[in-house]
Amino acid sequence: MDHFNKLLPMKIKTTNNLNDWINDEDWEDHLSPRREKSAKSSKSTIEPKDATISPEEVFNFSYKASRHERQWIVDSLQRFYQQHWIDDVLRLLKGGKEASVYLCLGNPTAPTTTIAAKVYRPRKFRNLKNDWIYREGRANRDANGNIITDDGLLYAIRKKTDLGRQLLHSAWIEHEYQILQTLHQSGADVPAVFARGDNAILMEYFGDGVLPAPTLSEIDLDPPEARLLFERVLFNIETMLTQNVIHGDLSAYNILYWDGDIRLIDFPQAISPHENHNAWAIFSRDVNRICEYFSAQGVSGWDARRLATDLWRKHHLATKPTLDPHFLDAENPEDRQWWESEQNETSE
Image 1 (cartoon, one colour):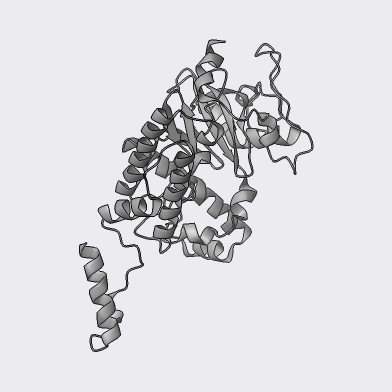
Image 2 (image 1 turned 90 degrees about the vertical axis):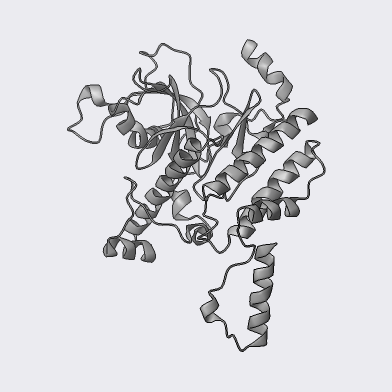
C-alpha cells in the first residue's frame, strides 16, 4: 500500500487498462496480464528461428504475450538477452501504434535491476505522415550509428524501396538513441539509454515495482508544484536548444512524472533549429502546448508566443528562414529594405 499512498497527491485521472493501449489489429490474440507464477513455471517458450542458437541462448520470458507479440518481442530483444543486458521481460508498461514499452529484469551486470525496453513497430515509421518535415537536414544513420554514404543505399531511401524503408526505420531509432544520449549527458531530464538494436532501445525505467510513472496528462498538480514543474520543463526546453535539439512533439503526453521529478520522452521526430526550415513553427508549437497544459494547472502570467520568441532569440535564432544575401539585388529597393529589416530584427 505504500506504493499507492505515494501516488495519492498526483490525483491520477485515468485508470485505463495497459493492455487496452496496445494496437493489436494485426495480432490474433488480445494481450493478457502477467500471471503471478514462479519464474520457472511462467516462462513463455518460443522456438528460435536460427538453428545455430543454443538452448541456453533461447529467450524465454515471464510476460504472457500473444503468439504474434511474443515473436515480435523475441525478434527485437533476444540480442539484448544474449548480450546479458536483460534476463526477463516482466510486463507491458505502455502499448501504442508507434512503439510498446516493456519492463525488463536487468542482468546482474546491467546498470540497473529494472530496464525499460522500447520496442518499435516498423509500420509506424514506414507510414509516418509528413516525415519529410522532420527528416529535413538530418543525416541518415545505420543501426551502428554511422552516417549512410553509399549511393545505392541513399537511392533506396529516396525511392522508398523495401530496403530503403528498413533503412529509414533504423535511422529513426538511431536518431532517437543519439538524441537521448546527448541530452542526458547535458543534464536534461530524459531517460538514460543503455543500448540499442535494430528495433529497440534499452533505457532507464521510471517508476517503482508496482506502477510506471504516469504522464503529466494523466495527473492533476497542486498550483505550487505546477509552477515548479513548469519552470523545470522550460529549463529542459532551453537545455535542448543549447544542444541544437527541438523535441518536435512536446506536450503533457510526452512528459513522465514521478514523486516530483520528470522525464521527457519520445524523441524520434526531434529536429535541429539550424537545419530545418520549419524549426521555428515546430518549436513555438511545443512551447504553446506546454503553456496550455500548465495554464490549466493554475500557472498564469505567461504568453506562449512571447515566451517562445524570447527563448528563440536568446539563442540567436531567426523566426523566419534566412536567405543568402547573394540572392538579393543590391539595386532593388525591396530587396534592400528586406535585408535592412532582417538586420534590425537580428540586432534587437
